[in-house]
Length: 259
Ligand code: PGA
Image (cartoon, rainbow, N blue to C red):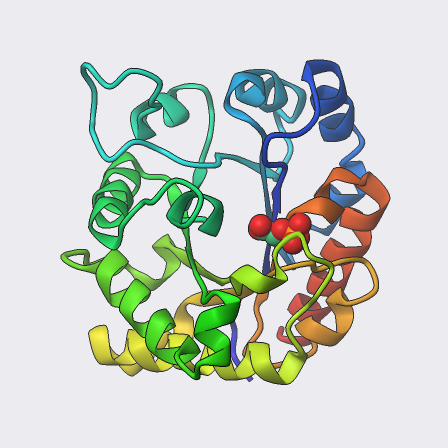
């Protein structure tokens, strides 16, 4: 059985306000207690990061940015650098979420630079890949996953513990439609095979590969029961403290079983 410690991320996206962000962070006591058998990170909107970091001071829960710039510093209006995230106490960052790949047209080449900045700043990057519905229906899902991974990891030689890969089929994000555990597991095998080709088998067996797309308190345990699925990246359900705690508990149970 793999020794990988499960990982759960809560992506708050562009939701909540300052008061509700701090309230949600301060309700995470149960989640913090599970850390050890599971790694947990939350990704609040940029303006609330420093405050959430303050609320979680001393907690094992990581706080991360939902994106970072491909540039280090300078005249890049509206962008936030990896170094700035570290400066306010973040230790993780999402790279290539589909709402940026598809919503904002971010290419693999741009994402490779972002990944480089994140690694260089010492952040834990969660690299997101996943196909659209049209790509799945035309039988290209696995090619898309391979291409996005190769493109985003191009030129990088991370250690297996220094990044997490999230498989997030675009058609399952925010739609209430979850990939079946079989589909997700098959996609995760493609991720691992691609990592083995790019690096080596030891690397691919050590990296956490998590699933995202309408994970909720009901579906988490069934998904995480699969050997290949090392946890989840959770959007909507991470805004509900109780549901997020149930999801983290499901991943923690897997972490305990792996010890
Ligand atoms: P969802 O979002 O759980 O709301 O589908 C997942 C994600 O976008 O990471």
